[in-house]
Length: 142
Image (tube, rainbow, N blue to C red; front, side, top):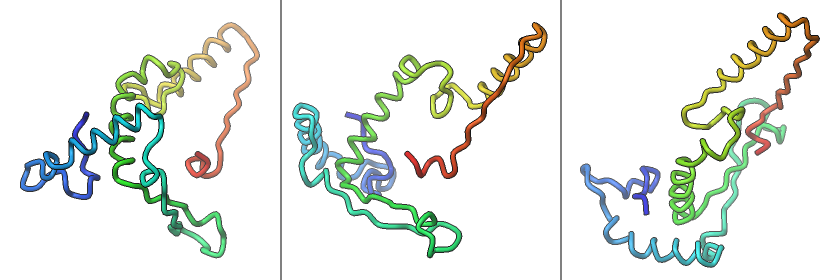
């Protein structure tokens, strides 16, 4: 299993050394292996405390509040380990036109693609249209 990252409430490193990992690693590994085998985390790891954090603007408007789920550290560690491991394969799984949040790709690639398509369309005298969608507060919709 990958070692925990710095969000492990400061327990990961103390004076440059991994603190407490020797004590916690076997128990966490047992929980993670059981969870992966059963397809479900323990009940204590599946519960969250939801709180609201204010954004900018009029706080009387519900759109200016962001819900945040406070999760069990075990869940966060397993999620991070899985995300790290899946990240290594994402380039082969995600379509090449998807450029956001894929290591080695840039959203600028799509700008170049659009420019190239418009340039070729123009040179071949092909009528071309472009639709651009922008969702308000897109990351709030995930």
